[in-house]
Length: 602
Image (cartoon, rainbow, N blue to C red; front, side, top):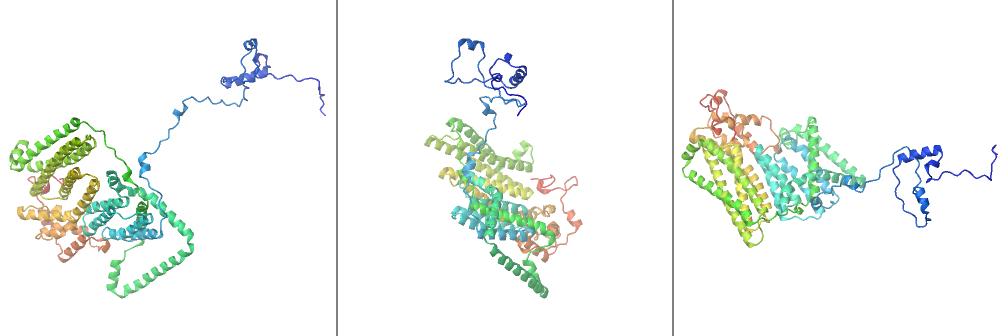
């Protein structure tokens, strides 16, 4: 029992009420209360309970209003009440654009075993064949990759459509350019265009967004395609562990037998050794990292193509709305003024073409080459700007009835016809310039570009007359066909042939420029007399080298050039070749292709 007795009859001293006056509190309690009041903001309004007894008027005047019990003091400042408009300070959630959801497709079906095998073969062929150069090997690697996309599209329920076949056949035809030609620039254009057509075949496209964005859609499947293929391999590996071991053992035994008996037969017969060496890739340990990278690129590319075939992006769902229609006068007046300007320019060009060159050159102070060069580049720029003007004019054209349609057709039709005359004038300037100063790679390229722009203008005119739903695909087909023709005609061979004809008529030739051409120019340069022939072919033979490249990495043009040089070897003499370089009045070397200016230039 405690020592202090308890007094049961005594009531304990009552604690001070929370709403009591601070003056009647004990000193310590008053101090604690004051500290709490300093830390806690002012009391909030409390709704009166309906069952609370009413206070007398005198009591309400003498005592403060009741308030809530003060919370226990924690030493931290409580949070301030939020402002009514606190949402405006929160980070806003950015919703993705609507078109991203529109172009998306459903999840692809699980990758099939046939697709996986084709992808593996594509990676293996890429590692073995593509490391030695470009040639027929591109077509060989494309075959299993195309089969992988076919199996993936079949599993997804997609059907072969006519335009899909057009894009696919066009892409394969473009890959024939590196197999036939040795020049680098046509090969680059052909391979790039083949990738674009292949992507169009996988996506499909009939509108301008579909045709313009479809060639880039394949890059969006690089990561997703790799993940899709990895999932398929993992699922099948987990479900068929017992069936993989016999396949691996069989393949290993077959490879060992081929290596052992192939080595024995090669050592027994030299002819068989040459045949085997030409058919099999030359793989060394030093090429391991490079071959591994090519294998990875082949697998990733084939999986991206197969994933695109199974779940393509629908670029055609992007809606391009026409701009606000303008009034007839506001829309037609600037275009009519532009047509008048074109007409005046064409009138001057007709005067020049009919024998007015001497007068024009005397008035302008330009030389013949300067006038031709300057005119071509400006006219090429005018053609490109005209296409832009036509596109913008169609966007804001008036469209309130048949009268507006006739007005738009008439104004834009006249502009297209005048632009075709400008294209013809530019090509005529180029022809005159080439007759005087020779043909170069750059001049062939820009002339081909001007011809294609003229074809696009003709297609636009046909679309205005017969409807333009087919126009985007027609422009894409014309571009791919232009690249194919540009590669098959062999620009380097054309340059050599044209300049040899010029040499026979004017006795002017630039041997140094011939040495920069590719092996495609060898048949034409082989017709030159000695010592011009040896001097012109010296640079090409040096680029070819003595090493015999594999058959799958050698173009037909390169193979033909090697045969010609092997049958008729060259014997260049440095003194004779250096004396053939044309010189200007100051004693320095002059390039006849640039009218006295250094380098190829234009």
